[in-house]
Length: 234
Image (cartoon, rainbow, N blue to C red):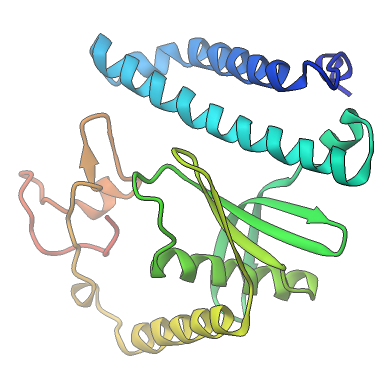
Protein backbone atom coordinates (compact mmCIF):
# COMPACT_ATOMS: atom_id res chain seq x y z
CA UNK A 1 0.00 0.00 0.00
CA UNK A 2 1.49 3.41 -0.92
CA UNK A 3 2.57 5.26 2.20
CA UNK A 4 0.76 8.42 1.14
CA UNK A 5 -2.54 6.48 1.11
CA UNK A 6 -1.82 4.95 4.50
CA UNK A 7 -1.33 8.44 5.88
CA UNK A 8 -4.69 9.72 4.63
CA UNK A 9 -7.39 10.16 7.25
CA UNK A 10 -11.20 10.45 7.08
CA UNK A 11 -10.75 14.17 7.70
CA UNK A 12 -8.09 15.02 5.11
CA UNK A 13 -8.40 12.48 2.27
CA UNK A 14 -10.30 14.72 -0.22
CA UNK A 15 -7.56 17.33 -0.09
CA UNK A 16 -4.81 14.70 0.00
CA UNK A 17 -6.11 12.97 -3.14
CA UNK A 18 -6.27 16.29 -4.97
CA UNK A 19 -2.74 17.17 -3.91
CA UNK A 20 -1.41 13.74 -4.91
CA UNK A 21 -2.93 13.93 -8.41
CA UNK A 22 -1.65 17.45 -8.95
CA UNK A 23 1.89 16.49 -7.90
CA UNK A 24 1.81 13.40 -10.10
CA UNK A 25 0.69 15.45 -13.09
CA UNK A 26 3.38 18.08 -12.51
CA UNK A 27 6.02 15.37 -12.29
CA UNK A 28 5.01 13.76 -15.59
CA UNK A 29 4.54 17.14 -17.29
CA UNK A 30 8.14 18.03 -16.43
CA UNK A 31 9.42 14.61 -17.52
CA UNK A 32 7.63 15.07 -20.86
CA UNK A 33 9.16 18.49 -21.56
CA UNK A 34 11.62 17.19 -24.21
CA UNK A 35 8.70 15.73 -26.19
CA UNK A 36 6.53 18.78 -25.62
CA UNK A 37 9.27 21.03 -27.02
CA UNK A 38 9.08 19.12 -30.30
CA UNK A 39 5.50 20.38 -30.74
CA UNK A 40 6.82 23.95 -30.97
CA UNK A 41 4.01 25.35 -28.83
CA UNK A 42 4.16 28.96 -27.77
CA UNK A 43 3.80 29.79 -24.08
CA UNK A 44 0.06 30.54 -24.37
CA UNK A 45 -0.61 27.25 -26.13
CA UNK A 46 1.39 25.26 -23.62
CA UNK A 47 -0.43 26.94 -20.74
CA UNK A 48 -3.77 26.19 -22.39
CA UNK A 49 -3.04 22.46 -22.66
CA UNK A 50 -1.60 22.42 -19.15
CA UNK A 51 -4.74 23.98 -17.68
CA UNK A 52 -7.07 21.81 -19.78
CA UNK A 53 -5.30 18.66 -18.61
CA UNK A 54 -5.32 19.79 -15.00
CA UNK A 55 -9.03 20.55 -15.23
CA UNK A 56 -9.79 17.06 -16.57
CA UNK A 57 -7.66 15.42 -13.89
CA UNK A 58 -9.39 17.37 -11.14
CA UNK A 59 -12.80 16.41 -12.54
CA UNK A 60 -11.75 12.77 -12.40
CA UNK A 61 -10.32 13.18 -8.90
CA UNK A 62 -13.47 14.81 -7.54
CA UNK A 63 -15.56 12.00 -9.04
CA UNK A 64 -13.25 9.46 -7.38
CA UNK A 65 -13.59 11.24 -4.04
CA UNK A 66 -17.38 11.02 -4.32
CA UNK A 67 -17.13 7.31 -5.13
CA UNK A 68 -14.80 6.51 -2.27
CA UNK A 69 -16.96 8.51 0.14
CA UNK A 70 -19.98 6.51 -1.00
CA UNK A 71 -18.23 3.18 -0.49
CA UNK A 72 -17.07 4.17 3.00
CA UNK A 73 -20.58 5.25 3.97
CA UNK A 74 -22.35 2.25 2.46
CA UNK A 75 -20.01 -0.51 3.58
CA UNK A 76 -18.66 1.15 6.72
CA UNK A 77 -15.09 0.16 5.90
CA UNK A 78 -11.78 2.00 6.40
CA UNK A 79 -10.61 4.50 3.81
CA UNK A 80 -7.73 2.29 2.68
CA UNK A 81 -10.02 -0.69 2.02
CA UNK A 82 -12.43 1.49 0.04
CA UNK A 83 -9.51 2.81 -2.00
CA UNK A 84 -8.45 -0.66 -3.10
CA UNK A 85 -12.01 -1.67 -3.93
CA UNK A 86 -12.13 1.19 -6.44
CA UNK A 87 -8.97 0.27 -8.33
CA UNK A 88 -10.15 -0.89 -11.78
CA UNK A 89 -8.58 -3.14 -14.36
CA UNK A 90 -7.07 -0.67 -16.82
CA UNK A 91 -6.47 -0.65 -20.59
CA UNK A 92 -7.61 -4.23 -21.13
CA UNK A 93 -7.30 -5.59 -24.67
CA UNK A 94 -10.16 -7.68 -26.07
CA UNK A 95 -10.23 -9.58 -29.36
CA UNK A 96 -13.11 -11.60 -30.78
CA UNK A 97 -12.38 -13.96 -33.67
CA UNK A 98 -16.10 -14.77 -33.73
CA UNK A 99 -17.14 -11.16 -34.28
CA UNK A 100 -13.87 -10.03 -35.89
CA UNK A 101 -13.73 -7.12 -33.47
CA UNK A 102 -10.84 -5.78 -31.46
CA UNK A 103 -10.66 -3.06 -28.83
CA UNK A 104 -9.16 -1.69 -25.63
CA UNK A 105 -11.36 -0.99 -22.62
CA UNK A 106 -10.10 1.89 -20.48
CA UNK A 107 -11.43 0.75 -17.10
CA UNK A 108 -13.36 -2.23 -15.73
CA UNK A 109 -14.80 -2.00 -12.21
CA UNK A 110 -16.21 -4.87 -10.18
CA UNK A 111 -18.76 -4.03 -7.48
CA UNK A 112 -19.91 -7.29 -5.93
CA UNK A 113 -21.85 -9.08 -8.68
CA UNK A 114 -21.84 -6.05 -10.95
CA UNK A 115 -19.29 -5.17 -13.62
CA UNK A 116 -19.06 -1.61 -14.91
CA UNK A 117 -17.14 -0.67 -18.06
CA UNK A 118 -15.89 2.91 -18.42
CA UNK A 119 -14.37 4.69 -21.39
CA UNK A 120 -12.64 8.06 -21.01
CA UNK A 121 -13.17 10.88 -23.50
CA UNK A 122 -11.98 14.47 -23.78
CA UNK A 123 -14.90 15.54 -25.99
CA UNK A 124 -16.18 19.10 -25.76
CA UNK A 125 -19.72 17.69 -26.07
CA UNK A 126 -21.10 15.73 -23.15
CA UNK A 127 -23.72 13.56 -24.85
CA UNK A 128 -23.71 9.80 -25.36
CA UNK A 129 -24.50 9.78 -29.08
CA UNK A 130 -25.19 6.77 -31.28
CA UNK A 131 -21.52 6.24 -32.16
CA UNK A 132 -20.60 6.11 -28.49
CA UNK A 133 -23.49 3.74 -27.75
CA UNK A 134 -22.18 1.47 -30.50
CA UNK A 135 -18.72 1.48 -28.92
CA UNK A 136 -20.14 0.63 -25.49
CA UNK A 137 -22.32 -2.11 -26.99
CA UNK A 138 -19.30 -3.66 -28.71
CA UNK A 139 -17.34 -3.54 -25.45
CA UNK A 140 -20.21 -5.31 -23.70
CA UNK A 141 -20.22 -8.07 -26.33
CA UNK A 142 -16.45 -8.47 -26.10
CA UNK A 143 -16.56 -8.72 -22.31
CA UNK A 144 -19.40 -11.26 -22.44
CA UNK A 145 -17.59 -13.45 -24.95
CA UNK A 146 -14.42 -13.52 -22.86
CA UNK A 147 -15.90 -13.83 -19.36
CA UNK A 148 -19.32 -15.38 -19.94
CA UNK A 149 -21.22 -12.60 -18.16
CA UNK A 150 -22.54 -9.25 -19.29
CA UNK A 151 -21.49 -6.01 -17.64
CA UNK A 152 -24.34 -4.44 -15.71
CA UNK A 153 -23.53 -0.89 -16.73
CA UNK A 154 -21.35 0.89 -19.25
CA UNK A 155 -20.50 4.54 -19.44
CA UNK A 156 -18.37 7.41 -20.58
CA UNK A 157 -16.35 9.64 -18.34
CA UNK A 158 -16.34 12.96 -20.17
CA UNK A 159 -13.22 14.27 -18.47
CA UNK A 160 -14.17 17.89 -19.06
CA UNK A 161 -17.51 17.26 -17.41
CA UNK A 162 -18.56 14.12 -15.54
CA UNK A 163 -19.28 10.38 -15.65
CA UNK A 164 -22.43 9.24 -17.48
CA UNK A 165 -23.63 5.64 -17.14
CA UNK A 166 -26.28 3.50 -18.84
CA UNK A 167 -27.67 0.00 -18.34
CA UNK A 168 -26.62 -2.84 -20.61
CA UNK A 169 -29.83 -4.13 -22.20
CA UNK A 170 -30.94 -6.11 -25.25
CA UNK A 171 -31.43 -2.99 -27.32
CA UNK A 172 -27.81 -1.92 -26.80
CA UNK A 173 -26.46 -5.42 -27.57
CA UNK A 174 -28.68 -6.05 -30.60
CA UNK A 175 -27.84 -2.66 -32.08
CA UNK A 176 -24.11 -3.40 -31.77
CA UNK A 177 -24.51 -6.86 -33.31
CA UNK A 178 -26.47 -5.49 -36.27
CA UNK A 179 -23.85 -2.83 -36.92
CA UNK A 180 -21.01 -5.36 -36.78
CA UNK A 181 -22.87 -7.65 -39.20
CA UNK A 182 -23.59 -4.74 -41.53
CA UNK A 183 -19.93 -3.74 -41.64
CA UNK A 184 -18.80 -7.30 -42.34
CA UNK A 185 -21.45 -7.70 -45.04
CA UNK A 186 -20.22 -4.56 -46.74
CA UNK A 187 -16.52 -5.29 -46.49
CA UNK A 188 -16.94 -8.86 -47.72
CA UNK A 189 -18.30 -7.45 -50.99
CA UNK A 190 -15.55 -4.87 -51.40
CA UNK A 191 -11.96 -5.81 -52.01
CA UNK A 192 -10.28 -2.87 -53.72
CA UNK A 193 -8.71 0.12 -51.99
CA UNK A 194 -10.58 2.53 -54.28
CA UNK A 195 -13.81 1.33 -52.66
CA UNK A 196 -12.63 2.86 -49.38
CA UNK A 197 -12.16 6.55 -50.16
CA UNK A 198 -10.45 8.63 -47.54
CA UNK A 199 -12.56 11.22 -45.78
CA UNK A 200 -10.02 13.94 -44.91
CA UNK A 201 -10.89 16.19 -42.00
CA UNK A 202 -9.23 18.32 -39.35
CA UNK A 203 -8.60 15.08 -37.43
CA UNK A 204 -6.08 13.94 -40.06
CA UNK A 205 -3.54 16.62 -39.17
CA UNK A 206 -3.71 19.45 -36.69
CA UNK A 207 -1.45 22.10 -35.28
CA UNK A 208 0.34 19.89 -32.78
CA UNK A 209 0.16 16.43 -34.32
CA UNK A 210 -1.45 14.07 -36.77
CA UNK A 211 -3.33 10.77 -37.07
CA UNK A 212 -1.26 7.62 -36.54
CA UNK A 213 -2.15 6.54 -40.08
CA UNK A 214 -1.40 9.90 -41.73
CA UNK A 215 1.75 8.81 -43.57
CA UNK A 216 0.18 5.59 -44.87
CA UNK A 217 -3.11 7.20 -45.82
CA UNK A 218 -1.77 10.50 -47.24
CA UNK A 219 -5.33 11.92 -47.20
CA UNK A 220 -4.19 15.19 -48.75
CA UNK A 221 -1.87 13.65 -51.34
CA UNK A 222 1.87 14.11 -51.68
CA UNK A 223 1.41 17.84 -52.30
CA UNK A 224 -0.89 18.35 -49.35
CA UNK A 225 -4.11 18.35 -51.36
CA UNK A 226 -6.93 15.86 -51.04
CA UNK A 227 -6.49 13.09 -53.59
CA UNK A 228 -9.77 11.38 -52.68
CA UNK A 229 -8.00 8.07 -52.20
CA UNK A 230 -6.63 6.17 -49.25
CA UNK A 231 -7.45 3.46 -46.81
CA UNK A 232 -10.28 5.28 -45.11
CA UNK A 233 -8.33 6.14 -41.98
CA UNK A 234 -8.57 9.76 -40.87
